[in-house]
Length: 275
Image (cartoon, rainbow, N blue to C red; front, top):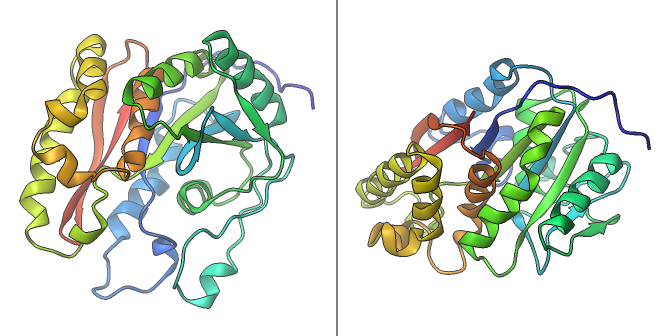
């Protein structure tokens, strides 16, 4: 497929919460549990400087030894959530893939010393299609779904983002999709509120610092945020935080700021943008 016409508008990068499973397409008790997060996701297109040529989305729900990407012309859906109502397994999101962007991203990653993998069989998982179905419901923006690294190395994810940074000047919206709090046992527990708020305050401070300070803090998040980091993201659960590192790395020297925050099921959850 030929690459679309070049666009010169620089796009921001985003770190967004993707919610819990198909949460935006269910009735909840209490009502309104996910409404504010859904409203934030719906606000994203109007907040951008231009319509994206494509979206490169790094999902918390795909780990691979090397950066991998869904390269099919029309990826299917991967319903990688369990125990939800039957209608949530009938959702659709027919956004086209972006094979041209897979080639471009692969070249950038290879130049940075990675060994990227294009996967023609991997479908959009719920870290991709659930938030995008809310934010871009027409499903008419091409999407390149990308993995995290199974090493879960924070510094490597910053470098991954740095490798992808040129895409911002090519009209590509880079999104990291995760959750800034991801202690599954802590959801619904009132004791999680002050812990998550403390981690959120640290994370907000880190994101809003100059880029060199920001990246140093994020690379060392386990120790720099102690003791709240590991209570917010237990071992092997930090895959929901690391999409932030990709978005921050891709920001270059761009300023970071919080664009959304809410207390959901007793935990503070936020989104961040880099311009």
